[in-house]
Length: 606
Image 1: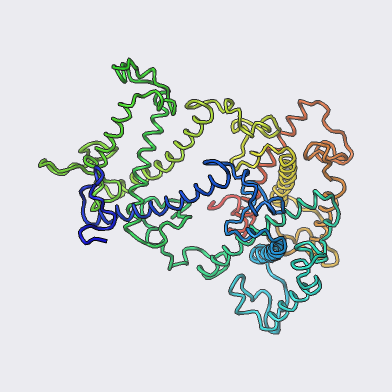
Image 2: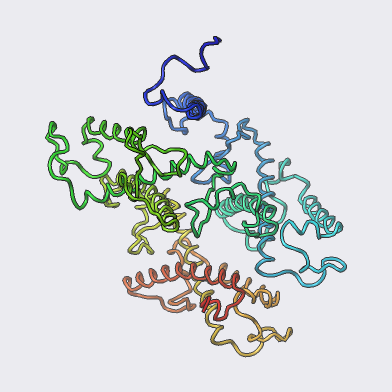
């Protein structure tokens, strides 16, 4: 309340923060305010968790009175998030409200999946032939948001009436408010999905929910890209009003990613904030590079003599990695802190008049002290601007890599018990459940960076392995389908009624616009026949092992009798399938980008 002191001035300043310009003081106070606000939120959350679960850092599973428990076994509750309702829509525990929201979610998800396909299909398969309206061909309607201005008013009336007819035929919200239908039940089932066990139906509905949620996110992203760049799949370079443009020519903007700021830290275009973050990034990168070397060098050589003569502690007695923290005396750790403080506050400060990362020391009458190349005290700095830019870009890139690397080293050290510890020592890993499975091959071993198998669920693993095998087999056929027609074609007609010969059908993506609809349906039904008949997966058999199929997928033929030979061939199939999935995606991208399957596609620039 007084006039003599500013808010928060308790008459005491912490060490190292007594000096500085007015601008520096203002920035420190702003940081203190922001951290204080964050801490107030954090401590309230900790109090809640403690009070509701019965202990500090208590398991939320102990909070049995939570109204969210009413819905934690519903469809859509999927790992790793579990039941997710951050806004608390379901905290009233109302089953009626939950049902209505679930119905809305399903409907929006289905529309979003169709809308997403509507963005993609015209770019890949082309557009309908003929007229959409008088004097308006389908091919004249642009893809994406631009179509809103081209489709006639009566076209929108038809779309609206069709949606109304669907809604009316399903009971006008009976699935949302009524008692006779489950959410999303529109009174119609798509072909091939009418039967199945209760477990299969539950799994399909969970998949639909997950895909619908993904599609809702995807279509919003497509709308943004379309609206900001001016066209569907527009080049982001056309978004000239982007605040990120303020920094797209800065150091560290490197191919193939370009300017990368997924969290939008620099979207305000504030050059001062960008400068501070860049200084922090460079400093953390330098520390991380030294830390990485500190993990590697002691594996090959150590200093001779004593680290602490008073404690009779030799350098050779200190273990590498995190274990060293428990071995180095407190006096040694204090020396580190003091040395870092000395550099930070006196000998290697960042002057705001200098570029980020150019450090200088106090001028004590002997002239300004700067650090040159490779951090050498009073070292020479590069005079050639191009060479200097390349060197600074390399430092940034290496620092970023080192920050990722040191975190990985910490994790490996912590989980295995030693620096460069053998992962086989991490006995609590849920991945151990599947490390002996087919497909675990050198040099990678069991590879699951996204942690799909961390729950150790065998049923989920078998389902994913079945899908992997199936997609791999299809990809191998598709890869061959790109290559073979370049050398040989079937004789005769693909469609006699349409006068279409096999030799008339172009190779690659263009074929999708040439093959008649009946041909496409034949492929679809043939795949369905295999899926539901000859190649139906029996849950009692290994993934991809069909009762009536033998070696090389020949129906009713003998399989491979020798177990060792069979294992080797199945491993080869998995490896080749994985390679083919990458290959076919590359071929489709290259085909779509270059517009041909000729020699230009296989040897661009040749």
